[in-house]
Image 1 (cartoon, rainbow, N blue to C red):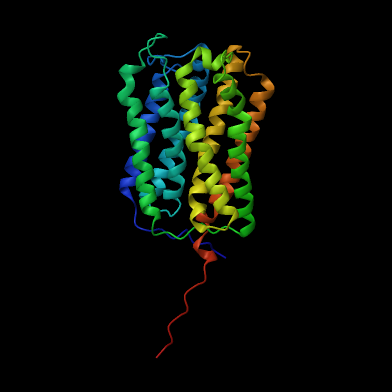
Image 2 (cartoon, helix red, strand yellow; image 1 turned 30 degrees about the vertical axis):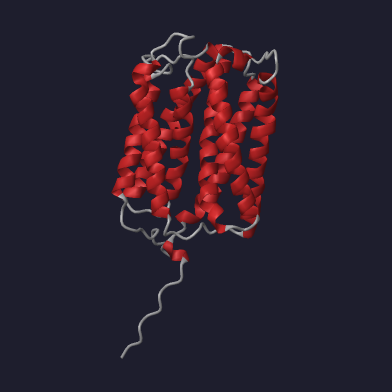
Length: 297
């Protein structure tokens, strides 16, 4: 039996153009940084530079190509394009906001301020991609998940929320709010430290909590944003894994080899799970019932 291609709607050239622009801006920012050209000098510590190198590698190897591919889907009117676009958009907004405002102004050398229009462009176009994609999704039906998938995804998001709060930030926050903090991240790069805390505890963890709770209660409105959030987590996971390998390469003691291997495994697992959630968007039209023929007069 010959399988017919996925049914397409009219192409969204606006979303396609924004995704191409985002791919260009993300790739340019990464190429100018410490990974390749080393023209853009961030005001951060040596450990911070290792982490930025990992982020730049993820941007060039994964995020920019992904934006171009989704842009092509959007141009061709593929129904998956708006949902998929939310993941790199969210990742770009999250990472480049930190790069834009998390520098150690007046404390460490650098020239990141001269490239602030580029970094701001990444964030601004990322916001535009998200708005355009969400507008395209307003008239779409929720993703076709089983109740089992909803529950599993809800549990996963609640686990992520708890891990972000308790596993990553709680001990550092207690130390930072004490009379004599000793945390290396706080003492070496306090601006970046507080920016990450504000974004993770003010946005990432609450979003995962709300969406996870919605899915466990069977709320259809939570499906699409949950898929987008998990796609963004997958990209962030690869970024964290690349950061770890960058620190291992430079000999930084904060990132042992075992942690880098574990981060890579987690990134692969989250990405694989997110891909499974997106799979219904790529079902062929052959799986749909064929229209009945009109009666012959």
